[in-house]
Image (cartoon, rainbow, N blue to C red):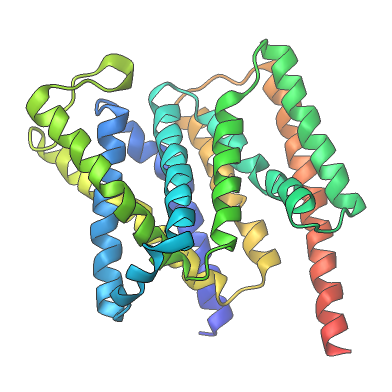
Length: 304
């Protein structure tokens, strides 16, 4: 089996796990969001720590915890924590459709940030895609009477997180390990409060589920694998595939989230969603075709 085939399998598995993850978190809907986020953070740290130890790369962590790099890692940690927490909340309040919209528009937000902050070229396809995505957001805002804040939060924080990661000269797995290492003390404090002080998180639910329910406890531990496992696969695939391939396959994630929300979780699709989502899908198609053509042109220029 070639490296390219292995890479394709890895990214399909990673995006499938991410896409089906709403079903996993829905089964944990009785766990307060902050308690679930805390366990996701801590068990991710355990898994990534073991992975880096086996690879002999734990020594890379101290360099990410000092100086300017530490500030970037800390900012990335805040971004990804808000993103994880927002997604967990979307499942618990029945807004997975809007969450999927956030991950659909993520590459278009990235394109906008690239044009604004990194002086990346403004091609006709990029501009058309961004305008279509903006139109979709306006349709939902006008039709539903409120902006799709959750979608914008998820897409925006993940885009901001990705920009910050471009500024950190380290691999994706080791940087995420550093990020959750920064977040771990907050997670431990929150779990201490829920188990000993009876703290209640958002949505007003009583915490301390871990240790009282065998299945839920096992699933909370498994949330670390659900977070770290796909990341490792994605990192493996990214080193072996063209960026255009990675970009296109990533749409499998929000597509599956959307299907889970509608077909399994029973979320309602309004007329405004029926207008907005085709606009987003058209934008992504135009953006993907443009990115593919640009990638081919670049490779031809290199080999010429």
